[in-house]
Length: 70
Image (cartoon, rainbow, N blue to C red; front, top):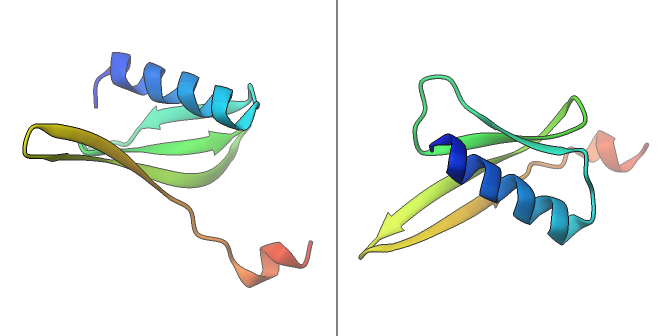
C-alpha cells in the first residue's frame, strides 16, 4: 500500500471509530497489508483485496480471552 492509501484508511478509521489516536502503518516487506495501532498498541492488520477490478480492505483483529478480563 502506498502512503496515500494508508492516509485514506487512517482517516476513514478515525472517523468511523471517532478516535484520533488510530494509526495505520505500512508493514515491512508486505505490500498488501498494513498494521493498525491505537496509540502505541498494535490492534489489527488491514488487508487489501483486489478482485475483478474492485478494491476492498479487510480489518482483522484478534481478541484474546485475557483481554476481555481486563
